[in-house]
Image (cartoon, rainbow, N blue to C red):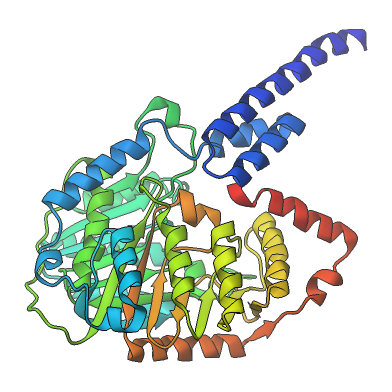
Amino acid sequence: MEFDLLHIGPLVALAHILGVVAACHAILNTRTSQGAIAWAVSLVAMPYLTLVPYLFLGRSKFQGYADARRIENELLRTRAHPQAWDTLASSAGLPTQELGARLVHSLTRLGGMPFLPGNSVRTLVNGAATFEAIFEAIESARNYVIVQFFIVRDDALGDMLKDALIAKAQQGVRVYFLYDSIGSFDLPHRYVAALRAGGVEMHPFATNRRFVNRLQLNFRNHRKIVSVDGERAFVGGHNVGVEYLGGKPPLSPWRDTHIEVRGPAVASIQFVFTEDWHWATQQLPEFTMPAFQPDDQGMHCLVVPSGPADKQETCSLFFVEAINAARERIWITTPYLIPDEAVFSALRLAVLRGVDVRILIPCRRDHRVVFAASKLYAYDSLRAGIRIFRYQPGFLHQKVVLIDSAAAAIGSANLDNRSFRLNFEIMVLTVDRGFAKDVEAMLLKDFAESLEIDRNEYRKASALRRVLMHVARLFSPIL
């Protein structure tokens, strides 16, 4: 016993010393005070459990990464931005009429891209419709295809995508394929090798150029983009895996939404891919955009990319501005309800203005801690007058924002800290009453298949379950 204490005592002391050192690092480097407190308390109190996770997840800023990425983006936007930004950019017209001049000005400055008129956008509800449209577009490609996903699986759907891309590459079509190295960590080498051997230019997106960053798991590229010949692009919540087609019980049927965009806004979506491709490869993809004539008809679209290299916290501020713009309603669907204080304050103020504020979330969980934290935020939202609905048929993964009767945004961003500050995301805001009506009809069907919850969900929970909810929320800034 004496021998064991002699060996264990110094190890315990070392763990606590390292915990204090790591806590000081967290206080100095974590972006939000809530995140700093969560890490500092857990590192000091439970260093045995939190030191290793902190090594992989604790840093919200990679050494030299944010500045390098920002400089590259500024150079690209100055020298290689789409011609449509110069010839078709609209700061007036329909967006100003529907949203207000100040909101249009702030959103275009926030995302660094203009509202572009003359687009058509349609919703693709669930996986079958989404991938049927994507595969049809790939089949019709004449010049190039760009593909970017957070998760790519080597399963039946992944094989279909691989075969389709190789077939086009062998026809002389240029194919660019970018996948996130963390989201697709289990993608086998043979899958990548087969695509490269078939003529597809395929690369991982990673942020580990420097050795000190190699253990980090933050800064994931969560975007989902497909574009063909500059004529149509696809953005939304689906990744490549059979679960997104509803093939993974008990989460099935999987509820998700993509959009298909045609028109000048495709150039903005492709430029987001160009920035990511340039970071991953230090090369620019070779593709040209079709010429679009100035046209104030059709839908006005604003592409809003966001990420940890932005000067502002673009994603969080986008949600704040969208919520503040609402005068009649703001409906949001998200798989994870972990808003930061700015977004939660905007939601509460919207309720006080008399706005119909609804949030649709899943009734099934895919992440235990996130789900527990979301339940407590749902209870806080109810107390503030926000209506919360749980989607019953299966797992809800779509990311949709409906603003009044004029605008809707669909993309990859969740209502959580990871999307707000750590992930690269993309949202497409469409200003058009017809499209907003389509999104409204889609969401009304979802609400009809959902259960509106009340305070009893929290009150009837056992004492242990409520404690676990509060513990989970302590970690919400770092989830």
